[in-house]
Image (cartoon, rainbow, N blue to C red; front, top):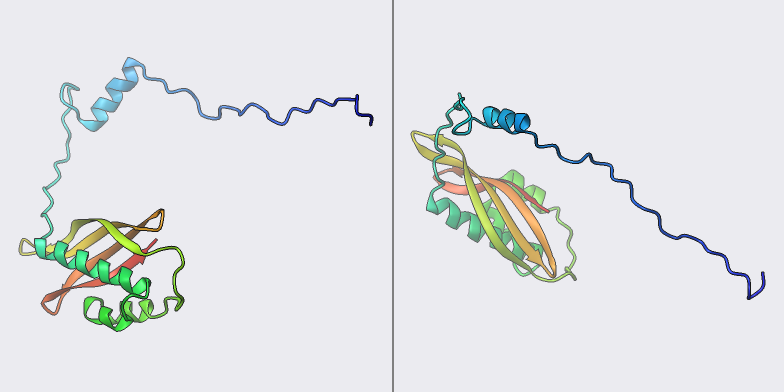
Length: 162
């Protein structure tokens, strides 16, 4: 091949649109409104959902403090033994198998904690689902778990860090 010979190669190709365009005809909009039981659709929702019991403030305070300790343990800023009163023995054993190396991707910082009542007894929440986000370095991570009242105090019975 000589220097004067030029070969044109197309290095890009158009991407094929694989999703159909949305169709919003009046019939579709009315059908969706009927299914959702929206006002003015002529059909009201046949299912009434009871209001959720809000989680107690004590559960939120416990979840926030416990998650901060869990993140400090995962960063090796606290010893694992400090988690023992916050989690069930089975969960503590599972957490003890975490890798024992110093993290190089930054320190974890809890960002947001949300709770939802999972079970109640006599009108009082006894189990709460916990959803949280935390950052480590430039990345945002998620955590999910469940706390229950065991022996008169809140404890984590399940926890997943992502």
